[in-house]
Amino acid sequence: MLLLIFLQLLYTGAAAEMSCTVMPGKLKQLDAGNGEVFGVSEDNKIYFWHLNSWTRISGNASHVTVGPAGIWAVDPENYIYRLQDFEWIQVSGLLKQIDAGGDKFVAGVNAEDNIYCLNEHRLMGTALIFTQIKGSLMYYSCGPLGCWGVNNIHEIYFWNNVSPTSCQATGSEQVNGILVMVEVGTDGSVFAVNHEGKVYRRVGISPKKPVGTQWKELDLYNSFKHVSYDAGFLWLIAENGRVIRCPYPESILSSLL
Image (cartoon, rainbow, N blue to C red; front, side, top):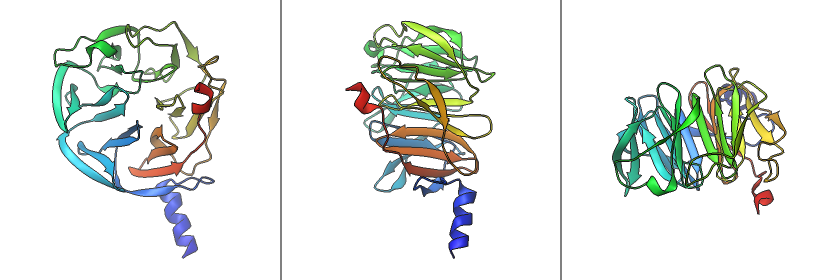
């Protein structure tokens, strides 16, 4: 029996040293933020984590996000939606990936890998005006200390101190490493996945050094395609779509106070 349990954890991608749980269902993408978790399945159905189970809500999406700027999604045709009173309201613009983790601003990239930002004063209504950010990325995620992104050749970039009013940064730089996606938690923690499915955390992040110092690989079995972090839990999606949740109490929140 013990061998069977071990093999099941190994197959689904549970952690080697962390006490992880295989959650019900399968997803292709999820996002955790502000104490909530939303995700989408392979057939583009939308779910949120409620009372220890996935509850489906109306609509279809290819990517969903939750954070200080609210709950947003983009559908397979790249149309953008904002969740309001549990109804999806379509807004102007087209994006393939969207992130609501910034300081009350929304960011994302379109099908041509152009980068866009919606500042805190333009979140309401439906005729929204996005600001284009210089550069080209396939994935973009923001937090309280800045924004992280990866381009189509998996190079990593960091934008420091992005303003919620102008969407502009005080500076940007290329960061060492090769990644396929990077996510910033509500508290500023940064986790990422590389092309081999290995999961990393950016260590050394502080207000004085928001870019951190180095990437630390997490000791996890198997490979993963997606990672998100919020409220002391690391949420992972294995290559087979299984969702893994791992307690991860270590946070940079105390350094931000």
